[in-house]
Structure formats: structure tokens, C-alpha cells
Image (tube, rainbow, N blue to C red; front, side, top):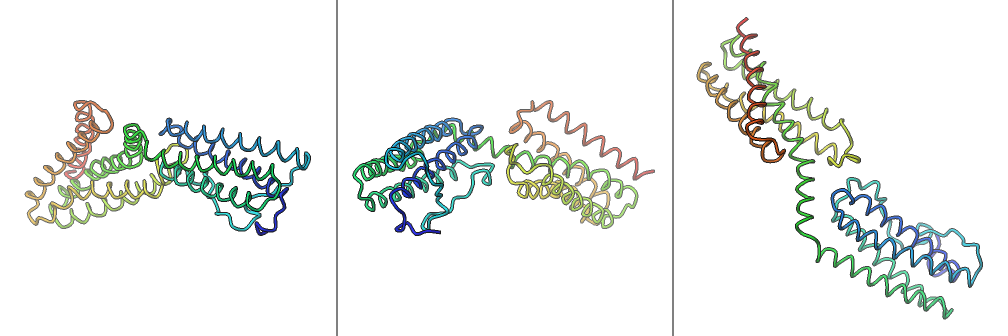
Length: 314
């Protein structure tokens, strides 16, 4: 790496051209990453990209006028003092706050670069252009800050709600449904086969934990979230696995009651409450009509429940 003080005027201009090109591509990546969930904010980053392209063209014109057509490839990472930037594609799914933070950092760093470079050069034309670009980058920095102050709160809240639904509610609901329904058969089969609360509790505990582990891994490995926007796979897996276990434990814990018939009565009541909660969540967050949600969940749960009783009594 070279120190900034060792660069010639030609190398400073070449570095500025390279930096403006990189910044324009980063803004394009930020806009693309926000396009689905934050279209208004994505347009702001597109405008900033166009500004960076304009800066690059002005730098190119001056470089050709001063030094000819060959521009040496000098990049930020070749010069000491620049902050390392994490590639946008590694930040997917992209959050609006992260995009704004990166934008502010980019503009602050670029402005300081132009201010320092303008003081270092003695050529009048180069000094004037670098000073002008420093002022324009200062305006960009103010624009990045204003993006936070003047954000469209309503549209951003809608986007946040959509992401919350996609990344938290959906995997949680999948886990709760699986845990509540799939464990019905083994638990009630054990209850009617053994007529022993403790053995039934152990079967239910094993079924709930096993289902939680299985569903957690299945959800985490289903996709990495980079294309679907469903969030980090580890977080989705943890949410799904936890809610699956919770769904299974709901009607398992009543079997800590020693009397098998009392425990089963309480467990059946808990199952009914679980199915109603699932139907309500589907109605509220998934836009499923309440009647349809109740019918689907109750019928499915009832069939699994009856299969457990039939197997337990066989």
C-alpha cells in the first residue's frame, strides 16, 4: 500500500476516478437491494448514483486534458487511510438503516479525500475541481442525513411490517402449527394405550423436542434468504424450532397431572385453545378469512387427534 502523501497529482486524479466509479456501483447495489421493500428510498440512491457518475465524467475530462488517455488503475485498497467497505451483496437481505449508514460513511470519507487532495495539489485546475467536488460531497452527506429525517415513515413502517411477517410471523406460525398438530397423535395414542400420565408426558416431551429440532433444521436449510427476503436462515430456524416445541409442549404439560383422565381433559382443552390461536394468527397476519382458517385448522387437528385415539385404543 502507498501513503496518500506519496501520490502525484496524476495518481490522485486516477484514484478519484476509481473511487467515484466504485461509489456509483455501490449506490446502484444499494438501490437494487432496497427496490422490493423500499422503492422510494431506492430511487434516492439511484439519484446519488447518477451524481457520482457525473463526478467521474468531470474527473475523466480533466485527467485526459492534463495527462492523456491512459489512466492507471489505482484503487482505494491500494492507499493507506481508507475505511474498508463491506460489499453490498454480502449484506443481503439489505436493511434500510444499514444502507443509509453506509451512504453517510461513503460521503464523509469521499469529502475528506477531496478536501485533503485539494490542499495537496498545486495545479489550479485540479485544485478547483477537487474543491468543487468536496462541496458537492458535503451536500450528498447532508442528503444522506436528510433521508433519515425526512423518511416516509408510513411506507417504511409498511415495509418493516412486511419483513416482520415474512421473517418472524411466517416461520413462527409454521412451527406452531406443526408442533400443535403433529404431536397430537403420539401424545394421545400414548395416553389411551398406557393410561399413565408420566409415560404420556415423556412421549409428548420427546415428540415436542424432536419435532422442534427437525423443523428448525428444515426451515434453516430451506433457503438462505438472499433471494426471498425471508431473513437469516439461522434466525428463521430458531424461531420455527422454538415455536414447534412450544406447540407440542402446550398439550404435553397437562400430563404432569397424575390422574390420567383429568390430564387428558385439560390437554384436550389446551389443544382447542391452540387451534383457535393458530386460526386467529392466520386471519390477522396471513389475510385468511377467519371461518376458513378455523375450518382448516380444526379439521386438520381433529383428524390427527382421532388417529391418535384410534391407534392408542387398538
